[in-house]
Length: 621
Image 1 (tube, rainbow, N blue to C red):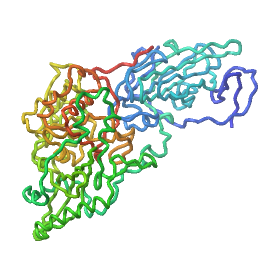
Image 2: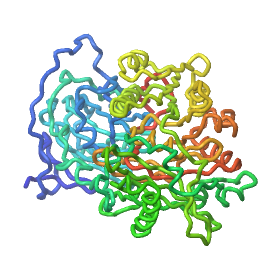
Image 3: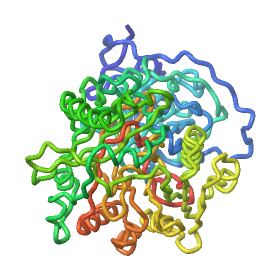
Image 4: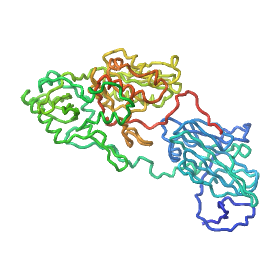
């Protein structure tokens, strides 16, 4: 316990030992947090630098940094002395027009009058204020913390400051969701007069000699880093003996001539709810589309849940196990009758049921089977059909897919060097494991200067990457133009193109799924991704399924051109909306939309940025 002086509106921290008499009644208060630290004097101080009227300003703003809580800033390996950007400010009010960043402001404060001072914070994020009892940062004490959601007056306790003395000051701020601004105000009471709150202007600010030091204000208070206790993605268990997606996607398809003999053939029929669309859907939004498409049930690898906290959430609608096993048993019975028990089933990888509003059903089955004599493992992955009021299965002959159809992933980029490197690592890992020779990437760049893309491509073991530079024609970033130009750069008209996002990982089976879900003139694949929360990762996923987002889209290049592609006039510089506009075109041309929550397809949490090349200085307002 320590003693303090009590005022009408505030009380005094006794550890800022006042050097003048105070007539107010003394009372006991709890001991505030104390700093026990050392500091080191920088060897790079510039003695000729004009120090009056400034505070040092450091900012951390890397795209891959998830900065929300103050502890997120303090946990960064580059904190506190290696910011992304540094300068100085000349008053205790500033703003920065971005989000997901952290700031550290520090220096010396000198008051103009011996008095009791009280501080107040206004912030759009989360802000801490620390003040020393002298000019030594070893004595920094926590004064107050303010969060954006605290709308009540968060004035601090009073500190006693003496005219002509220097006091070390440090401010920490993190900004997550909106454009950031911070204001630190002070007022004083000298026993006779009390002033109103005012911004601390340059008259009272000084750059310190000490630029590098350790302080309890730099230490995270988090005992367990957020996300470490979140349950990982859990696959629903079934009777599978292998249950290994990578094994399934690497296995060759059983010869199509064999598969054609198992069931009688039939033709693909456009679902009736798609056929009934005769004009553009006015105001097509996510919920409308979800209603149109939520007729798809899954069993096997696509039947899974993930946990958000302690809540289990299913994305793909589950298909009952007994029904899936019964159907596969019927299929294998026909198979064995045709081929005299030459093959046996090893694993049910996937069973899907897509019901038409008129009552007919389209199935997709994926199995691993083994030849009785050679022990070689093959894959069956076929589309089946059952008419309403019929128990007879048939094989849809015009939905035969090819493992050698060329797939091109299209990316539009600008000033995202970290994520370019991350994506190339993902591509190289996929290629080295799959040896897929029918896969390529098109990078459409709008003049990135934060990474030497050509150098990165030269270092990449995967060589089928085409770089399209648009900086001369389009100096301003546009996703719709970038994806459109990337699709036009693909030479093969019979290939599949994938409009992708740079902040996604690349699941090992994504390209395989694209091939088996895209059919020219018939279907388009629009996987549903898991948008990771801040501090989550593919190894420790936590987030939400983006059911209302349609930006990741795979279709034949010819189909993209047939429906007219993106509206690059309307959506040239608009962010969002181009995907639903293209979706509307596809629905009006009666394309069936394959909508699946793709396991292990994650969108990394990142800061939204305006597409600009130059850094942004904090503005004093």
